[in-house]
Length: 340
Image (cartoon, rainbow, N blue to C red; front, side, top):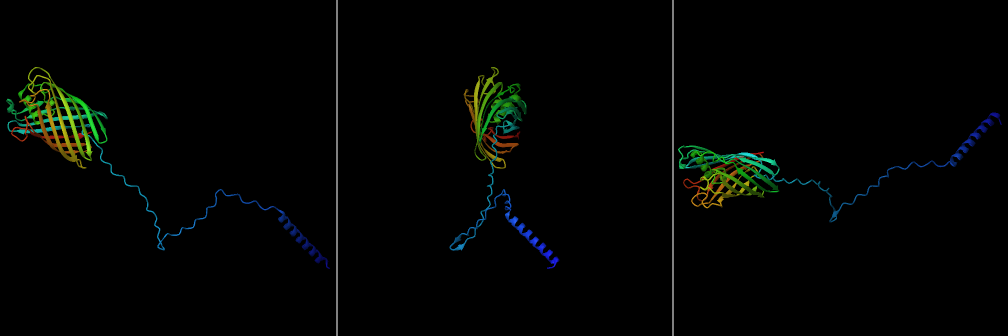
């Protein structure tokens, strides 16, 4: 054998031996460590779709449930606002008769909120008569001032019911003048109001009154009201008074019941019944008559800021009725103003 061939054979054998040893050592090494576990578990397999329900052997289409929407809120009724609340305005009457001409009592007033439940009010009655010859006056016109009146009233409202209680006192300015035209204008003003609120025109009396009333919304926009006002009339002197022709202390009360319906727009109407009764003097209004009743159909308007009422006040019995007879009382009554 040639020396070169022998050397190459020896080298090949050595390489094979080294490769076999490496394989043996690789088999003796431990297996590699497993990969670290994952924080999230593998998602579960998706469930198989349920078979479609069948009806009479035929598949039925499954429709998705309709989307649920919240029911619309019901419209809340308008807030209840009682008549006895803060505001300002004027009451105006117009009475006309053949023998007495025309009379215009005008009573500006204001009602102010001292607290959520306490109101302060004032009224300033004025009278204008265009013909006072029926009262032995020499003038064809007369102007008078009544008794300015101030009052305090407690008001409580719960739900659709409001009630009030308070008092008032008049400043005796109706007797500030003994002029026949002054006295005639004031007396005609009392007549044109069917003796309602007669404390405004009481001559030489100090009127001290109590007021109590309730208002209830029976159904939506249908209102029931009742007001009772007893008044004590204390005379200032021993001369004859224009009220009752008496020097004695008088006790009267006035009562009014009222029904009013109102539309959503604020316009409405109703009917009022009222009576004035002197319980301490049989002939307080003359001819042994001590009571005067009247009724008033009216149209009305009321909103959050404005109110108005147009009525026809009709005396029902003597001494001032029946209202459509000659020289009896059927008077226009207007009350207009603004809430605040």
